Length: 283
Image 1 (tube, one colour):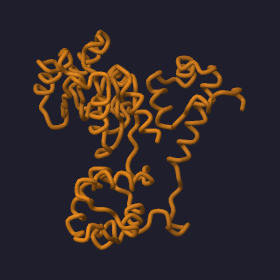
Image 2: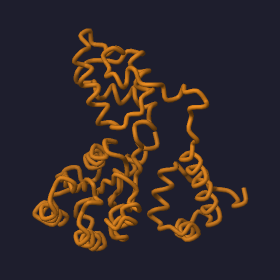
Image 3: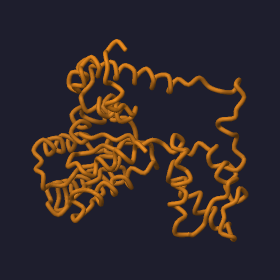
Image 4: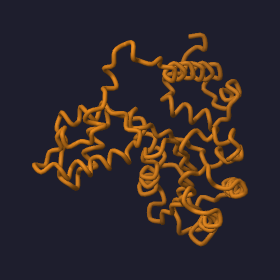
């Protein structure tokens, strides 16, 4: 799986990382995996929830005893990084520019594209690039429905319960607006009703059990796939630019009029590998 490959690669790097994904997609879990399987696993993991804490607490945690300048901290995870006050963002940018290898790795969690936060004025332009030298897009659960059996098995491991085929089929038809957080809650509640050890269709909540199938709607009810079309066009443009630039990311970024970090993020998001852009630019 592409996400798993990116996470494994991130574990081996000593770079700041951005995790971009909707609420509940598992960004905090991924940050912990990157830490515990990374190069500084023997040191501490610090979580700073920028949504829940007032600005002075965020500042104290960032630059205090166990913060960015502590050699005892191995990884510092910023939850909802776009909510850090702008003056603190600039201090973090300065820290990133002078960071030494023995200081914590910074992992920033974003609920949406960091560029949207820049356009909205919440984030200074330098901040996303500084904290996201290696960006990873964490897809929502509705785009990872093939992973449902594995994800459900992991969530149910402690309880010893399992899913029936009927329950799994209904869960595949649901769009999971709450992502992994909702999945965990549904499985926890449903497992309490599964006396024989198997979660059946009738044990699931009504919206999942009775919801309309996502992929079996009449043609007249289907929407036009604008996002998929835009995604395909974007992928073709990036591949064309990479071919024109003979694989040089800086030149491709210039042709596309985007930053190099944004190019890397979009390549990760679109799954563009080296084999896709090798060839002549007019192909």
